[in-house]
Length: 372
Image 1 (cartoon, helix red, strand yellow):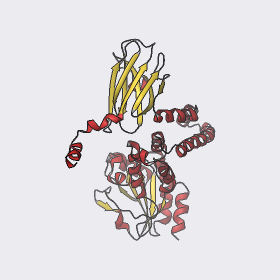
Image 2 (cartoon, rainbow, N blue to C red):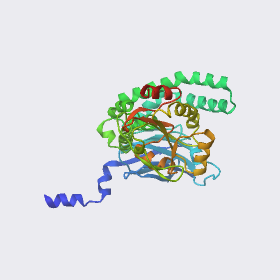
Image 3 (cartoon, rainbow, N blue to C red):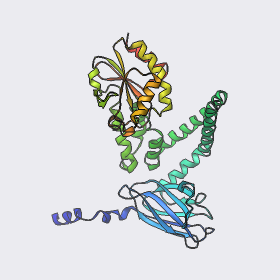
Image 4 (cartoon, rainbow, N blue to C red):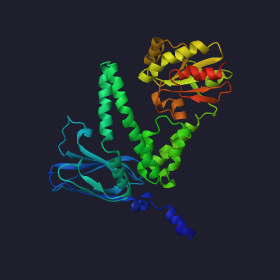
């Protein structure tokens, strides 16, 4: 028995991947020869890879191994590629790939073909049907908003924002309904990762995380969610925090050196419009409370010192500024899972978080509730 177990442990990893094999068979009869189908997917080792095959009389087959289920893409392109076209502009369709057999049926296009074969793909089709044309409407509203903002048309901006509000609410309702009714679906894990993790508030995020089954959490995306959630918990209200960074004068700064004060730690960057828009609110709070045992520490996620310090000067920020100029790979951003800005948290004199993500007038109101 021991010999048998030892032999099993020595088997190559590829031996255990047979159960994760997939096979995709397609038929696009109106697509001529001289074209190829490229599959972009995550293989059994968790690596992003691409496989390709030629179409023969409109038919193709691609096989390989993967683990769990994750978003994949089929793209139809000529063998002799047009170098002036972007890869994303070619005829393509996304779907969910996992172990099993798939059938792609269509005529002259991958984008309009039907891809069927596994539970994950069936879930994806169901979610897409429930969402309907709302994502396309949202994209159009987004383009209209950008044009209005570029033209500084405040009337149009308000109108567009009013139009977007009910659409966004409905999309959120469809999204949440699917997630909470499909906890054992890999699609739900991706939907949470794509829509609920920009800024994670543990109290808000916890129900989504707990909705997922152990099987799904063991997948590629599930593991990412667990890692993000664990980091976010470090910035939950009631947690003590500390970090080291280099300040704008090149000296080491340690957050705990401000113990005994209320401190607002603000993550920002010179290129971040919403961050810069909040700076007048922070300046107002700084002037009001700086003589009342209060300090602000700006943690810049810039990558160049000139841009960082130029913005500090332009916006007139007199408080402590630190950065290691690594962008989102900043040591402190990685430590606490900061993947979107602006973000901030208020800590008390003991170094414990007591409030998070203060915006606008909330900055002064929240701080004044602690500092008398």
